[in-house]
Length: 121
Image (cartoon, rainbow, N blue to C red; front, top):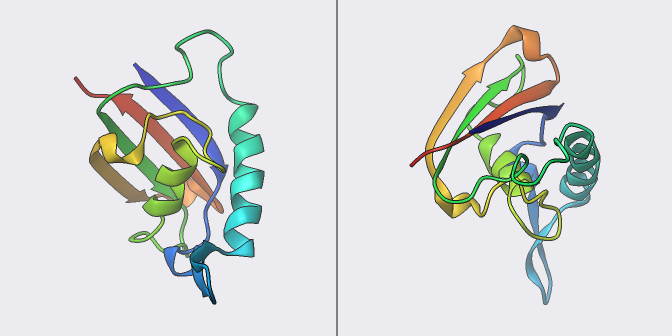
């Protein structure tokens, strides 16, 4: 089983978290805004049939990201939004279940990212 989605590319991993006095590492405003926007984009693409929008267990994540975007640090935000949690869409059980990661530069992606989440047994 595989799930394919397209949504806005995330901020650079360098811009996802900041240090907050007395709180430690917290999500930045840019990260929160992106997660909210991308979350709505994902919701419009999810098939409303039971089991067709969630992958349990090990999975492979393939990302196609546009030019000018940071190819080596886009995966963190994407993996986080696919998982459970405050900003997660619950497409995957948890990013600790990711067993493969493939990231490609793709001119056709523009300012979006095209994502494929495939179950691995």
